[in-house]
Image (tube, rainbow, N blue to C red; front, side, top):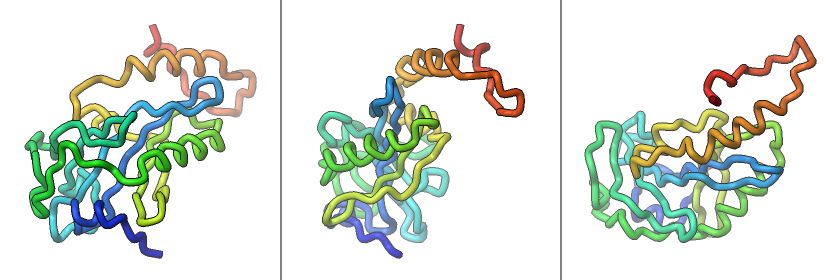
Length: 182
């Protein structure tokens, strides 16, 4: 089934469904949003918004849903306007933003075994669709847009959650993250 994106998202980048990678982390059973990146296809021949396939991305202010940085590609070329549509990127207001945040928080609480997830969310005319959840959300996309490390939010929570895991089942694989936590 095809996803029809919101008209504002279509105007911004018409070549693919533009998604927002919303990264959430569980803390004491509640999902917290630590990063949001608008992803757009910049190539008329591409059918995905993936930055590894020529897409561009910009940081979204979590509180407001407004794009707060220029877009960049993985070569760190900067874009104030979408290279094909000409729509201004900084200040772009993501439609249905509050609904997207609530949907991610609700979905993450249903996966308590996953501490950190990156959600690709499509904005539709009537709401939002979760396209997929990534258990390895990609630190590059999270940090490259605003060039601010996100580890200060993640590492203390990992330390707390990893160290309290039950390691009594010798057949259960539990990664040893202790070398990264001091």
